[in-house]
Length: 182
Image 1 (tube, rainbow, N blue to C red):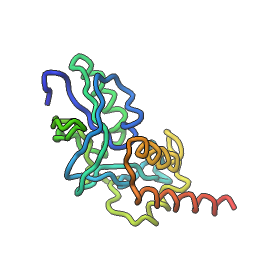
Image 2 (cartoon, helix red, strand yellow):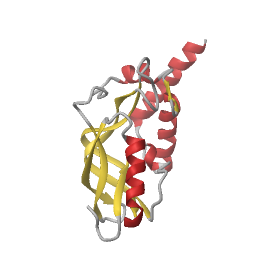
Image 3 (cartoon, rainbow, N blue to C red):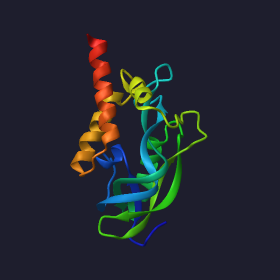
């Protein structure tokens, strides 16, 4: 897992724009075999048990562009503890070490949080309509679920990534929000 220069962490959602930990290098990266999806019921950060929202997970299939961070070996215990607290409040992900390809062509083993398909919060494949229904109005400890989706799209654009399905999802969520306020 360690390459002699530190360990790598792969982010595909908010870790891309708000890692919250010390790192010595950041690079765009691609993980093959998984795709970014709103596939996890959120009962902590973007929803509650009474009114779950949705957060991103890495669902099987495809490929996902994200960010990889190289963490100095000396910082690893602190960074790992932080990641466990942030990413695993309800243990909806499975930690794994997977190869990712960095923007400069290097391949590195990276810590990745994969969706646990057997966890009760696994939402699976949902229609855009159902995703919009769950995201609209959901609020958790980290704020409104709609803000999470909007932030995701803005930061993906900043990284040069266009995700038309996520853009369509935001349009549906905004339409539902306007209708609820009318």
